[in-house]
Amino acid sequence: MLTDLPVLTAERLSLGLTAVFVYVCMCVWIYARHRHNTAPVRAAPDTDWLIVYASQTGYAQQLASSTADTLRATGLGCTLMPLMHITASTLQQHARMLFIASTTGEGDAPDNAAAFVEQVMPLALSLPALYYGILALGDQRYKHYCGFAIQLEAWLQQTGATALFDTIKVNQRDPAALAAWQQALQHSVPQLRSLQSAAQQPASPQPASPDWQASSTEDWVLESRTCLNTGSSGLPVYHLVLKPARALASRNWRAGDIAEIVPRNPPHLIAAVLDQLTAAQGHASQPTKAGNQPGWPGTDLLADRQIHSDWHQGLADPLDLATLAERLPRLGIRSYSIASVPADGQIELLVRESRTGNGAPGVGAGWLCHWAQPGQKIELQIRSNPSFHIPEDDRPMILIGNGTGIAGLRSLIKQRIAQGHTRNWLLFGERSAAVDFHFADDCAAWLHEGSLQQLDTAFSRDGDTVRYVQDLLPARQTSLRQWVDQGASIYVCGSAAGMAPEVHGMLVKLLGAPTMSTLIASGRYRRDIY
Image 1 (cartoon, rainbow, N blue to C red):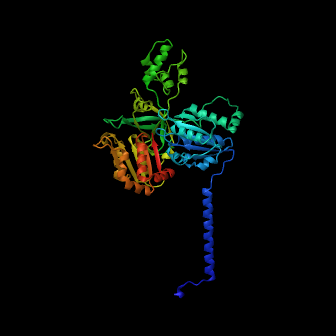
Image 2: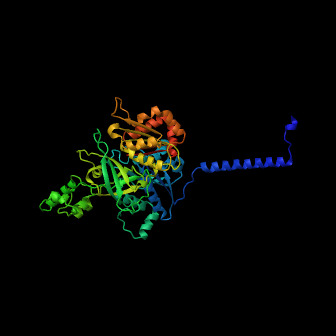
Image 3: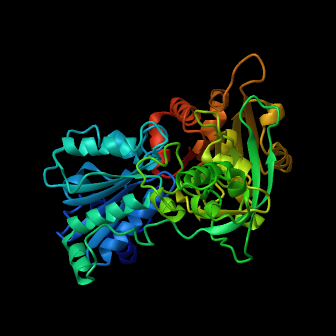
């Protein structure tokens, strides 16, 4: 009926026009903001540098930050950015870029470089105006040493970009290589050269400054060491408990961080060197006494030096012990996922014994699993691994790992429980449930109390069918999709050879490549693999 229609009064008309005006203003604001957020990145001024990092465990990010600090100290403008945020437009509109790129697994790109590898590197870009430098981080023990950085360098060369200097490769944390990076920057950045001249520093390469070197180590004491898999068909796995040597030892770390151990040579190896050195100097040989005498100076001087079978080749004779120690490079650090949380007041590690080609224990695992004795000090530093920290909210978490990878996952679960977040799902794989289910009691307790909502295991040597952790996923596809749709983050910890790529491939198959790309870009897919 016409009498039911509202009467159009002046007041109603005014209110209506006001609402329309506000709506139009909101539309204009949203459009302007969209234009601002999607506008191309403007070319940087001549003084600006873009410092890009491809990091898996946080070390490349740390060095990128140190590089930025070095440039900013001279008044230069620079921007720090992960490689995943670099687009073709970014490359085209910047004239100076420094790449700090690590390699994971057997020559693979870190996870935060995946988008760049998939979306940018396939493009046939022309970048003749770009000048770049690359710091490549890797480990010579792997076949494809610095593999991703080498791929990045080859691609940049194809674009026509110009290298400011030869790519500098860093084996583990080699201080000489880091010093070479600083030296290369000084030669390539005029402001740094001016700063060096003003300080009247010598032109010869100097040791890397403290900001570039590993942070100070602390002494921890080996409290206990227990073999967890006696009778296993695999190599022994040891659970180590380390206590701080001082009451004020650093607790400024988080679940997911990395323990970096400074290993030591076994006494018998040092004894052999001292024996050869004594014989070369024409003195009587006392290998047993020299090598095992407490406080013997050679133990301290040679404890952290690389000693190969041909260590004496090319060395002048006679050679005193101190000079020999100076000429031998230091042992590289060994990195391990931490299985505990700061509230525990201790660092727990899970270390699998390794063997060299001749069957001898590896340096790092040999030190921790055999040569270090309970009560002995272990030199250690904790490195932040922000790419493996847990989210602050209570979103679901899916944790996938194998072998000693359960160490890193255990710390995450313990932290989640401490925060009252119980939507946790663990998938774990090993050889045999009877002897290889590390921290089985913890898992059973978490499951019983509801801190773990789901636990799935695969033991490859049990039963007639060989099953690995990635083989658990297809049967759980529906749950997997539901958890991801509910905002779950996926964390993977364990071996880079075999497990990690197989799990990744299965996740891509079950969730789809677009979903996996979204998870990586949003930080909801994180890995600590080795």
